[in-house]
Amino acid sequence: MYFLQAPQVLELQTFTSMPDRFRRREPSIWADANRGGQPTDSFLEGPVFDDAGNLYVSDIPFGRIFRIDASGEWTLVAEYDGEPNGMKFIDANTLLVTDYQNGLMRVDVRTGSVAPHLRRRNTESFKGVNDLVLDARGNVYFTDQGQSGLHDPSGRLYRLRPDGQLDLLLSNVPSPNGVALSPDGKVLYLAVTRGNCIWRVPLLADGSVAKVGQFFTSYGPSGPDGLAVDALGRLLIANPGLGVVWVLNARAEPVVVLRGPVGASTTNIAFGGPDRSTLFVTDSTHGNVLKAELDAPGTPLHRG
Image (tube, rainbow, N blue to C red; front, side, top):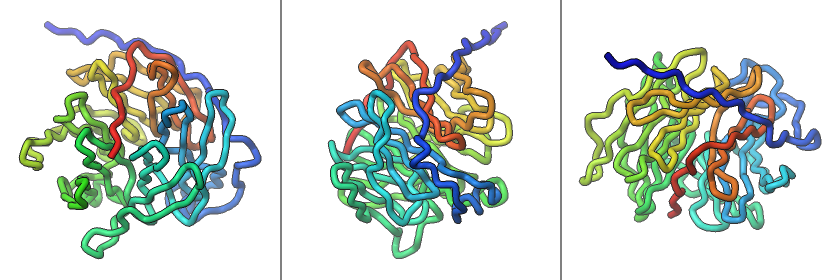
């Protein structure tokens, strides 16, 4: 008989907090729809590192992107009419951003200029794009979440090829959110927030997907959000409703649980630090970035 061992529990520590000068204590359309009208001075998401070790985060309700240096100092990089969420670098100076309001956008981190990348599909607006990941061939996988859920399982997973072809891979997801690739690039992990689970999506050689299955089941008021994969092939899952980050082995068993402070909303994750073995976590509702040292680095992030 097989018995699951109890996971190791580690405490997430505060790396930095958004300075008061950047906190917006004012209403927003985003907070009205997503926070029940509760005053929200920021909502951090999309953590990603540049080559110099700076961390970038998005602030969804106020259309802002920040750079945080290794000492925890914040700089406003861009502010525009949008709702930026997930971010990845497609070259040394350009962020590709999933913007709920505008589709895929490009941000030049040197100048702060913002430009459209892909606003619509066949002239139809997206539901509300959420997160993205790039593979070694320059394909961009991104989720179109909108307000989908168990009541409306119509969220989508897309692949945007380097030549501009847009492939609809899944259209039946109850709230598709974070995405991550296995080290060999043959499997995509998909956070299904309102289904409180992770789907395993095999990527076939002909460009299609098949035998999509449920890899992990969570619990609680808000399901999986941001994802990452480490060099050991373990899947890391940010769960804002529980205030934790799960580290799962190949059998989807939690081997490490990173626990945030009481009340933390752990939405998304990125590996950073000198050897990329430090996990950085956005605590969205408090405007904090948390961190923990792990025993393996994250897999390298690809660019377009």
